[in-house]
Every structure is written in structure tokens, then in C-alpha cells.
Length: 293
Image 1 (cartoon, helix red, strand yellow):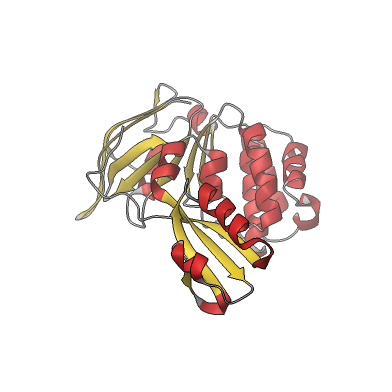
Image 2 (cartoon, one colour; image 1 turned 90 degrees about the horizontal axis):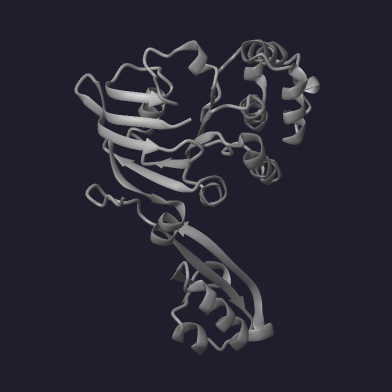
């Protein structure tokens, strides 16, 4: 489903939430929508779903998104960052979605099982009484099993444990197929795994747009941390490491530089290295005026 946004504007009283947003997202693209709180991400996704009035024009799959046609709504799947406080039992929620989507309930149950959740075990429980991780698995199962044309995922793995997150990554490409995906997330593993393009908002405007590969190269650094036996600190200090708490030595590096520094440390320090960790860390987000096509 192609997404065409032309001069999208939205105000809430005196507050400008969106100011002249132009985007053309091809059908089948997988886009991360990034930005600080208040940047306009939530408003823009609601505009895409036809949930709020706005200035400018939105077309989804060639059709106007406002007012939202029922046939178009049926092709959109949405996973919110904060699960809705539904009091209805999980079984009723699933049954309602199955009826609206005209999809057998067994299809949702099979998808939930692949995420590590047996729907029958929670079918009689109120949705709002589930743990955060279980709520997220239910919502993800409903979205993935719906075979949407457009999937809007807002921090989809925030409440999941590492195993469930891995299951979701393995399922996403298969289940979403050719769907267009809009992902709101700053998790580096999600940017690497789920998207091919990144759009950054600030103050309701697009301030950066480009490939995910380029975004990660420009905005992600790495931190190398070592714990070493022995008192010889000359190599560490000479190669930019600084002592930190717990006996660790730390050095921030560029993303590509870690491929040089880590082998050098292993060669120089050898079996004196007790622990070694390499962590990715996001740099400060792009500022207005730093737009890239």
C-alpha cells in the first residue's frame, strides 16, 4: 500500500503538531518513523489511519484516507505502544477481530502460538488484566495474522522478553509479506531487522530521510568495554580506553572502528582479558535543517 502525504498540517489549539509534511512511501517499503516525544509521530500515524482531520492530502493505495473508507480500514493493522484497557475477555476480543477481518480464529491462535502464547490459556481473562508482554503478544498476533496492506507498529517489542522479541523478528518478514510497514521505534535491533528506510521528525517537520543503513552509519556509535587481569595499563590508556567503575575500561568508537579496535585488543591483551563487551549506542538525533534526501 503506497502512502502519499502532501503538505500535511495539524494544529491542536495553539500547538502545531505537524507542519507541511511531505512523504511518498512506496508500496512494500518498511519505514522507521523516529523523533522525540512531541515531534509529531503519533499525530502523523493517526493521520495515516484517517483518525484525525488535518490540512493537506493523504492517499493510501491511491485512495483518499479521509474520510476513511471501510474497505481501506480493513487493510490496516495497528499495534499501539500502550495497549488499550479493554475489559472484555481475550477470547471476545479475538472473536470480534476475526469477524471484522473475516479470518478464522484458528489463524490468530496459530500466530499467537508462534509468538509463544497459547490463546486458549488466556481466552477467559480480561485483556486489561494481562501482563504487558502477554497483551503485546495478543496485539501482535492480531496484526500479523490479518495479512494487512499497511502495518503501523508503535514500539512493537517494548514489553517483550528477549525470546519473544526474537520470535517476532523471525515472524515479521514472513507474516507481513509485501505489506507497507511504518515502525515507531528507537531500538537499534528493530531498525536493523525490520526497516529499510528511516524518517526523522522534529517539531512536526521531516528533518532527516534516508536508508536505514545510512542512518545507522551516521547516528550509531559503539562502546567497547574490557576487564583485564594484571596491572599493565599502558596499552589500554595508549589506545584511548578510560577506567570506569567495577574494574572496567571503556572506549567509545565509531561503528566501523570497532572492527579494528576489538581484534587489536585481543591480539595485544590475549588471555588477560576477563570480559569483553561491545554495545551499540545511538547518538543525538538529527536537528532541524539537517534533512537528507
